[in-house]
Structures are given as structure tokens and as C-alpha cells.
Length: 294
Image 1 (cartoon, rainbow, N blue to C red):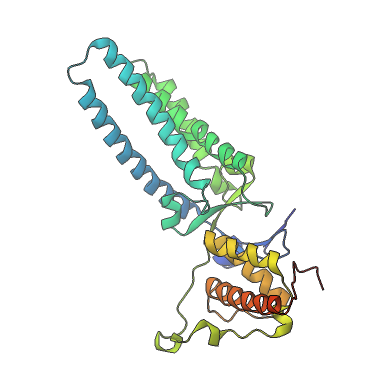
Image 2 (image 1 turned 60 degrees about the vertical axis):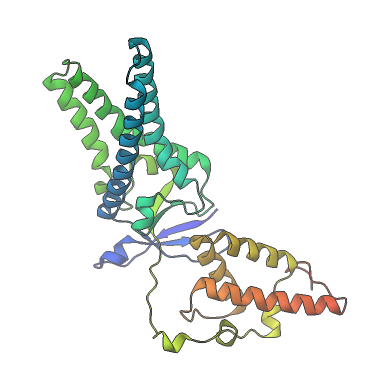
């Protein structure tokens, strides 16, 4: 179980949004909570994509509807309603279940969903946080729209629907972690991904990674074949969050500071050096299975 503490800094927006986030590996991974404005911006981008997809889906059904009977027309209308329900619920869940744990809108805003306990984001958390969105937003608005279309919507019905949606919509404004009700139930945060800056000129960085990183024999002897395989999996998956955690874990174990060269470059350099050392050892009949073998 990860230990999560709130940063004590005051007076600065970044300090107010920053959380100390200790992963199960013992890595102190400071994360910045996404602001309400950033979350709204990401949601609006996703909403545009959903609407565009729905428009294309509707046009396709209209082509099918042309020249069909009334019974088939009613069936296609049911298909449209089911498709709209599946789209607005499946869109968020499908993208957040991926390795980046972010919808296209969140990725453009440099955000992702993480589990507040520091563990890997689990499927039931994604389902819970997105199922609540149906109750928070889509269900009351859909009901209100249906009532209006049927001419059955009264002032009281409209007011109730708006109040229901408003209470949930303004919920993130009244808690420190900018949590939706869905986040509260699922145990998730929406955080900013670290933004890297180019601190050196391009010319100064035309240096091979082998020359940038130099590892001693003692540093390379820390890990074995098992850890090498796990490191290869992380590099192949290319998940930024995982690389941050693993890079900081390795740096702390080796006693190295972050030189600003990037976590991916550091991990590739260490992977290459460790692979070469283990292969040399195998030539002389020496194998190191994992970090526990001396």
C-alpha cells in the first residue's frame, strides 16, 4: 500500500496542487493535481470527439433508414439509443483502461488517471469512476431532453435536473484534490504528467547516451536477469508513468542524481550496460538470476 501525504507548501498554486505520492516501490513521486479548468478543457475535447462520432453514426443510420418500413425504423432508433449509451460510457473507460490511463482530451492536456493508493490502476476503479459520470451528468440531461421532446417537461422537472447536475458539476470546487464524486468512490486522482523542458541547446546534446551515462561495476552488479527482463518490459510498453517510477527507483538504488537527460534515455543506457555485463558473465559461466543472488 502506498503512502500518500499532502504537501505542506502554501501561497503558491503549484505547492497547493502538489501531493507527495510514495509508490509501493518506495519511490517518492511528487504529482500535481490537475486543476478544475484543465479537467473541464479535457472533457470538452473528449465531448467534441464523442459528438463527431455520434454524428457520423447518425448519418450512417439515416442512410439505412431511407426506404425502410416503420417497424425497422423503430428498431434502428433503438440501435441509435443503445449506440449513444455505449459510446458515452465506453469511450472514457476504453481509453483509461489503456497503458496511458488517459482519454485523448487528457493526453492533449498532459494528464492521466492514477490510483490514490499508489498501486496500479485497476479495472473496477475505471468502471466505477465512469459509471458515476452517467449519474452525474448524462442521465439527468438525457431525461430532461426526453421530457422536453415529449412536451412533458415542467418548470419543476427542469429545475430539478439542473440542480442535480449542478451539485455534481461543482463538487470538484469544494475539495482540495479536485475530485469528482466518481473519483471519490473509485479512489482515483487526475494528475498532470511531468512536463520536460529543454535545458540545453541541441548542439550540446549531440552526445551518445553511452558517453552521457557511465555505470560502475558495483552499480551494474545490483540487478540480475530477472530485473533486466522487467526493465525491458517497461521500455517496450513505453508508459511514461512507469518509466518515471522505475527510473527513480534505480537512481535511488544506485545513488545517482537525475541529470535532466530524461528517464527513457537513462533506462535505455542502464539496460544496455546491464545487458552487456550479464552477457560477459555468462561467457565465463557466471549468472546472476536476480538482485537477491550474491
